[in-house]
Image (tube, rainbow, N blue to C red; front, side, top):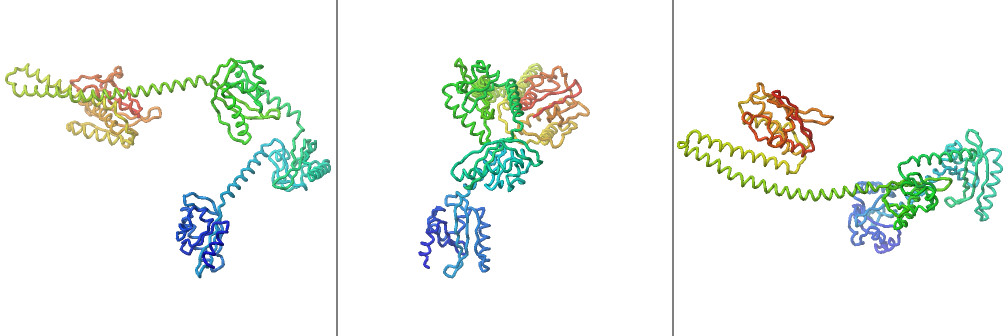
Length: 621
């Protein structure tokens, strides 16, 4: 047969047909393959069969082809399986693939017939979902439901049947329906069933309802209301029996009345307004909170349409929302809360949060609505939005102030330092060039001028550092505090090699923070400890961690000069000093800088100390 004739034959096939050689090269395709995969015939010829196979399946596809070719001599050259294919646009879809090893022009080839089963899978899924919904509906029914063949063999029962009669579902399926009927009623039940079947066959879909007696697995008998009809299930006539226990009818009525009383009691104690409406939207019950909320007496609300409690512009929406709520409840789906508006009889509107549920009362569907006035919450949200807007404006203003601070810092850094350097320089020149023309008092005055200008320069440097800490953005990461403390101590020892100070740094202290700013904080704390232990023998400085209400608290402790805790509140202010500047020099900026670093990390800093007994500074991050 010529290739053209073979192609014409294949084009008639309803499935996609692809012929490939032993190396997976496509030799022949039909029109259905073009339509299915989105390639033209010319594009596909000569390509690898893997173009229609998802990449994740390439390995298994190749292995199966090899196995088929190897087994072709033993007559096992045919295979069929479900898998997935991929189109030219990359979309995947489920398929049934049938492979057949054949001989074409003396060569072995594989003929692949591919059928798209997307619709079949969707239909199967819909069928499963339909059956699942049916099972849910049957098992949610309060009455026992039994579906049996016309000869009486039971095929389906629901959970209520098991609970009512004490038989397990597996024990009932296949048994005659007479197994659940009291012996004295079996002949009558069979006669009634015969009449129903005759009426069904004559075209009369009659419903038979009567009282009967059933028997439990243990042999206990009790009266029931039995409703039977013949219906069609999966194309076959079946007898549908709905059984309701009426032995405790009066007790059930009392229980219902008590249940309604409890519901009324609970609704009256509820903090929200409760409005109960029937399927048609008529209000059947409200609680005291509803009277307060709508400023209407109970008698004015009962019997009116629930839509009257809604502004006119929202009434059509409310009707649609109620329809959706009943539908979702019927399907067993959750009903989300919603926010809307309500209307009082005087026409005033107010926002509410509404939660709805669907229940059954006296055999009819009702909707229970819990309503809460959220005017205060709305006002609070509005206030928050206004505050957020104000915060945006304040941030913009703060950015402008920061810009001015940048300009000020630049001025301080350049415009003030220049004259200070000039004063210091000229004072030094006078000391060097005119010392022989000045008396001791004159030289002392010049030295004091130089000292003051140098202190002013250091003060400017400290102020600039403090400003940079305040303005800078945090660059948070993992910080090795022990390593930073070690580096700071090495610098201190290099600047004062003659001092003997015992240093104890706890290993492995780590935190989340800005490494640059944490170095600034530790430099100031450890430098303070170094300074105020001068003259102590032995001098000791410790950096470690302790617990503080379950949170990690780091500390720097020394045995130096300490201070009176009565003045501790002044420590972290700029230019605050508790010691003689002559003995312990400094500008009083260091601890203010440390406090701003810690606050910028969301932590806090505090101290414990005593005069001449050292000090401990604690901080958290």
